[in-house]
Length: 160
Image (cartoon, rainbow, N blue to C red; front, side, top):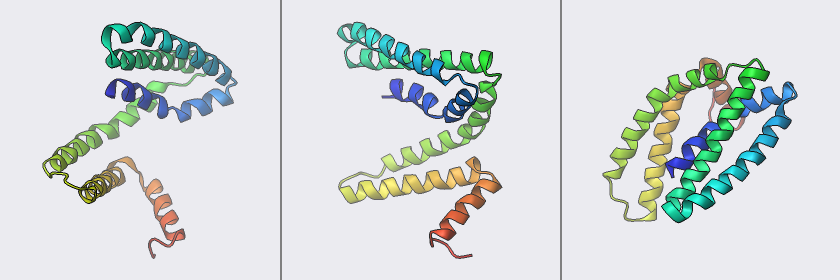
């Protein structure tokens, strides 16, 4: 699962990249590259599944996604005068706290046996609440917290 989720995660955080490419008139190049790397993904997956089984499918998918990611990062740097490494450096500054904290919460929750759907929902609520608290403390600046509080106030969830 992680073989496909990690490259996909890199792709998902790229909405800023997509906006930059659109503004610079380069989004069409990304679109063509996605089609090409999707075809590569299918080819590599078909070749690896007989040798590696379902793991081969995950490796093929990860390979296609990573090739597309590398190409788009090159495109951003060479043609759009954008430095993606700055974005990812800033992203990693927060992740080095969030990932270990959430791993600890997840491991602690594994100690609690899940015997029912209610147990599962409570564990999910605890994990979600812990994630929200960590992101509030580490992942949001004062302005972003203000936006969130304003939205919650407008929705009637909190009073001022």
